[in-house]
Length: 212
Image (cartoon, rainbow, N blue to C red):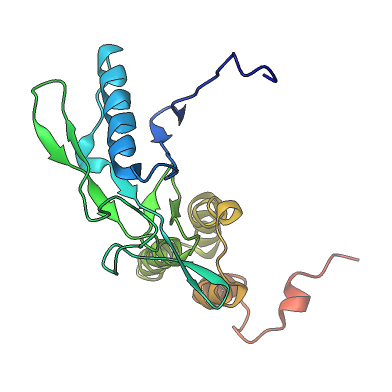
């Protein structure tokens, strides 16, 4: 408030079983404050009947490197950011309330993807991990379909009911390049054209043309 005598604080935002915590580095003690916030979350969850799977938790430290006016995120294998007064090589260790066991939380580089609710994202926004996952799903679907005795109609249903939802779900939260998507989807398209009795070189403009 304008008078400065009322303070509102929020520790975290969570959605069901997918929670992300964040702190800034205003005082140079970002790792220490992240450890405090994460341990508070673990204990709060435990006292309400839940349990945080510490072996599945990860954390990312974002430090910026400026080069000719362009900012990039540094990996923790690179030199420590001179603007940070805290040792950025420190680990985050949390205690499991159930048995007092100390667990070192896995640290990721900003370009390493991690899984949220069905989507793989990275701190620096790159979609490479998600693209790799989609490519694996496509390869598995093609292997199952081409080596099966499914009829053409059943193969189309297998695409509509299984593969298509898997491919569409993460696209709204990723920045995968259009050319990468086309290259990934091309074998699927060839298979679908085959189920229609068409050659893979058949003009797609005619395939998607309206009845009029």
